[in-house]
Figure: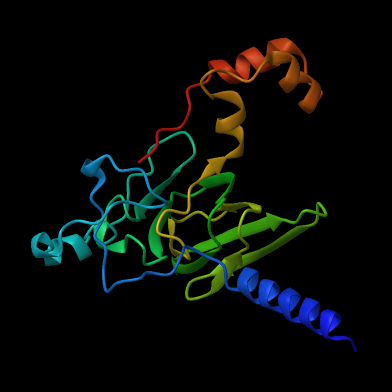
Length: 220
């Protein structure tokens, strides 16, 4: 094998390995507590002066109790990301708690910057994601069980039981982002043109108006 081909193969494998382990960038110091007030725009947040860092920058009690599920979807996501825990800045991890009332739904959505893994605290959920080949991968999961949603793929969780359910969700990003499919398409600002929506969904313009007229679920 020629030296040129050998070098090309090595470059390919190095690139493949880097993509395999890609997530948020690695940190270059012990800590970099987020300082959103700095106004500096970087891939993440500027760092607070280490002399001003306290234990509060690494603490959050917001997942200890169930969230309120009295909304149109019957579910609520309580995030524990860098917006809530400044100490997560540059660390490449975050957490959420999701609570569902009986019949509640966390509707189809994606996380453009992270893979998600959920652990069922209570109840039973029907969960699934859709591959780029348009294949649905779905399963019913119960207390103590885990399910993984690959990065960027559309997925959902539905509580079809008659009791509340809850999960803990972990992400390999300090701020995974969430794109809710229905809300994004029908409640964006400015709005998606009607002719795009009724042609994409093969529905009439009046139905587009009816959907847009419904209030979007509140975010927390």
